[in-house]
Image (tube, rainbow, N blue to C red):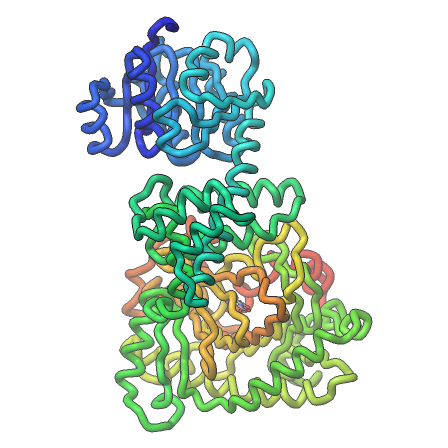
Length: 630
Ligand code: OGA
Ligand code: NI
């Protein structure tokens, strides 16, 4: 028997508590700390000593074992008020058992060293039962001198130890590789069982078949056993594996190693979390397969019949009320009853497919670099940077067709002028122009609805910048082609810049919206447009209406996705001013925005705002085209 130690354990959850019980049963004195009072109560009944802060705990013991959820919690345990680092004597060593990014582990170790505290990088795996028995696995990285005195303790904690060498962070890497595999494996198992259920097979029987056959895996057996018993009591909560898959795929992206299966598994877990099952066991990923998201997302993104706004029968008040509610919630809604000809939309989609199928040289004949200040033309995959990273889409930038003698074009206004249409597809030109006409009319109608929804005269926005709107339009193609490792999204998280975006999406899907309860899908709804409001409407309403971040997932459908975002914006020269009664809602939202700027402090014309934004997503082109006198 080894000499009894005084061991501090911070985080006595699913893994921390069984670790504590195991070590106590081996004769050590256990001191614990958790942010949850009920966890601390339970520890007390088990004969453990509860400390009021990580600092007091560190002062009273030889080593601190940290088993909290994530790096943010470790930060506060180690370096927060009354953190471990503020202890004056006591623990000489901290053992980090959580799953976090290797860089974070290394950074924590460096900062602890400045306080004279050594670090052991020691992530663990195997589940609560093995933690209790001392038979879990542990990946260990630390300098030999740090590790020496603790070897007997490590043996008692984890029967299976894997020495990853002396470099702090290498054990964290190994843990993420394992969890990437565990996560994809679990999702694959859920997918298979959901299919069995759909095919009318008995799921329990299928579970037994897999366990005795080539599809078997430890995590399949462990998690699907519980899922089939409808037992989602968390042993490992879904949000934790979601975090781990996020860390693992980010690490892979940094290493420029593609992980398409990991990305797909992460998307399933995000959906599981977004749908309210974050705190359930990670086996709950099966639930997301049983009940597809489309059925629930309508609760987040309402479908509004806007017939009354386009001079068709219906109640204007009812439409205005629904639009107002949607805009105050997240600024996203579907519209139906909009009067735009479905055949026109389908023709445009089909011509768009034809355009993107042209050989690269033909598309390059209308590339953006040739569009000049009008900012029109084709850009290739990866050509646009949203949130500072390349998107996995190609696109054709278009807008209201203005002849050379238009006064705005003559005055050299950026973003105004002629479109670049491909010579080999003459029908595309006519179709785009007809679509722009139809959508511009619809835009005016929706702005009337938005004004009414704010209790303003229907013509308010026309009088404040949209009588002669800036109309920009894009045709995007999201190819179903594996992305390069630095790419995470079809379009990264962003908000739209102007007043109102009217998006036609085909039936592939992938649009996601950041609601207050997490990311939700905005799946295709036949015959509808997705509308969302942009930064200028948030600015004008003082934040009452939300310009909500959204993104598009990587397309893994096997088919190209065409989307047609139409931007109905204030006139380029319009000064952006608050709607008088509404300014009071404004708060500084910069922390939530990817570029950390607040719309509410913006003063100036819409053109100023737009050019600032465009410069960030097309840095090179901006320099070439806009920063030279026109
Ligand atoms: C955009 C946008 C979404 C899509 O262009 O601003 O968010 O589905 N597009 O293409
Ligand atoms: Ni957008």
